[in-house]
Image (cartoon, rainbow, N blue to C red):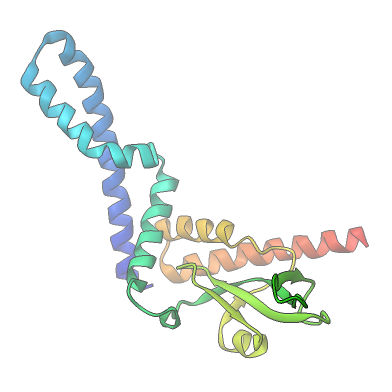
Length: 201
């Protein structure tokens, strides 16, 4: 993501918040006008609220939801109509190692989460782009991890948690700072998960 793209998304979020505040004032005034029978103003306000109803129901004025929606839209719209190979974002998150079970009757072959790449039935690793959500599945995991920046911890694979965190960081920080913040948070949680694994052994 380029800095100007980040700033454009922030502008859209701020505009949406201003719109929400304006609509809340319109509602208060509308209730008053219904008592005074000022029909023209009532009709205007009613129309304004109707035009904004979709976004109001979607976000309810919650800044965090607006930020998430606008950044998702910003990243997804850049990929619209392009092949999945076109994602060239910077950070990927490991989603797990998978084994493959082949049904001898050829009816229900399946992939299942296994411990790691050293498992006897290892088939592939899955990764997801932090920015746009594109998923990659590969059995050549060493090559993928050598050629991409991957946040990897077998005990934390909740990509959505880190994506939401990253979008919130992007709202107030330049791209490079937001990326470092989410990396730091991931690594901090990775250290915690290592300590808890040692205690349970």
